[in-house]
Image 1 (cartoon, helix red, strand yellow):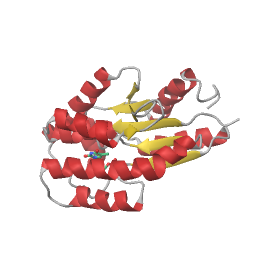
Image 2 (spheres, rainbow, N blue to C red):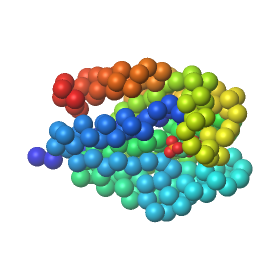
Image 3 (cartoon, helix red, strand yellow):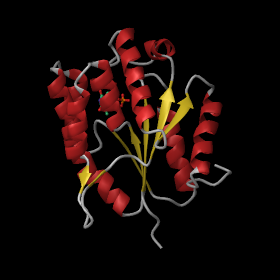
Image 4 (cartoon, protein in one colour):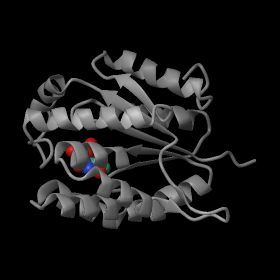
Length: 218
Ligand code: TMP
């Protein structure tokens, strides 16, 4: 019998260390026989990847930026996420709408009410019983002090438009995540990203086991 799809997002400020754990979580699900769609935002489709390149590299005003990330999300949802969930797959997504609330809302100071409206329009999924707003079933929020994240990033790679922002920007982004988590406590699992890599994985695996999505040996 087909299992229900599961939608999991990873969130956190740049430098919080999500990447290797995203791969590990996908591997853990595959090890249990689940089909995993591993994807990211902005991006995940040819069109959305083009929008990602624009958003990460070209100067633009905050409304344009918000519209482009939501346009990319719309395409990603329709082309990749909804079909995968309908097939009963596990969708593991590197960032989703919480990033828009944290970066465009918190970081850029863009109007949260406008973002909420865009969220309702873009993520509406029609069903026979009426529309619902698609959001992840679980969000693993890598919480890390902005100063520590900045130190980790400094040696890592050539910074994009977001990574090159000042410390104050990341403090606002971190606050944006904290506010979003406070509004959806049952969806968010806070991961203490300051810990060693193995300890971070232990926290993730514990959350997944508690939800009954991974066996205790994961
Ligand atoms: P990544 O490097 O973790 O893939 O994320 C790309 C950058 O895009 C990251 O700095 C966060 C930013 N971003 C937004 O500003 N708004 C969004 O809605 C998303 C999904 C990402």
